Image (cartoon, rainbow, N blue to C red; front, side, top):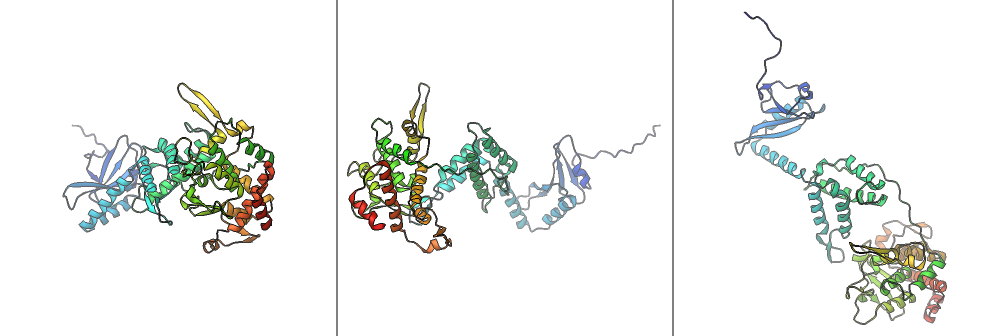
Length: 466
């Protein structure tokens, strides 16, 4: 008779109940399994080979009468077996209607947090593009620079994270993408600190928006507390007097491959200190008193960076440029497109004219040289013309506050005295006299540099201002 005995416990059925312990939750398994708890019927743990243990609750749905299971949470030292049992006891004690509502909310959260980054980008872009009533009474996109935000999301986030659930994107993922953009390791993109900054700003806006109540696609933003990027160096390019002279007279050459109105727009930016987006779409209806003593242009808020109306005085030199650009009485836009009559020249036309363009096709690899190259000038951008004009005004002795008004910048100091930010809300003056003095002074200085005499009326006005 065999009397051998063993101390090994008899094996239980796959779903038989035991008294769960934290040690069981920490045990590694070779394949996924389930272990039910004897003390809290319905509670069970699901262990995976990767070492993740989740608490779940199996119950009969109070409305449908079907067997259901819902996840309570993942095991951790802070959320162990005792905490899971307490959660199960609380759910069993709930009113059936409350339990149904809780389960519905958990399902909705699960669906929301299962959305991919591409799906959220699509919703975000639609939200940005949605027309809303602006302060000037016009219906325009909620975020008027939405195309820039969409470009950064599509170019940088979508290729790498588009198919991932948004809730699974981590801070490490965003930091790695940022490092790759800075180092030039991102496919199709050269090393660029600016691209990394644009990506971070777009990603932060996306995930913060996705966290808001009513969406809750993610519970936390992976962009919070990222390591700071290196500072970008401020641009300081200013054209010298010799460069201004070469540039101004060079734009009048007849052998240049760039349209005359595009070249006139570059002159106009130097003379008026307006941004490219503010002047390139200038319409005849925005010109006021062109034949009078105090001509100016009224730029609508929708084209202004700070979304406020600009009234910019026009010097005699600016008026001359406008008169040449307006070739006929039927022409609506000052800088009419040579390709699409009746439309303004494209917003990047002046940048392309200075930089030049490349045309690469299967049969053609040609290049149109830029104005800087054709005129033998070190490279500069249209925005550098604003800086050059502001520098000329400073050399003429105009105050920083007056120059800031011409640049449409916020004035924080006037005569060395600090101005409270709220003051700008109350003071609605356009400072036309101040601005006209600055812009007339710049026009006179440009005429001196390029060797052209000022009209007698302009000389008289400058003498009165002085």
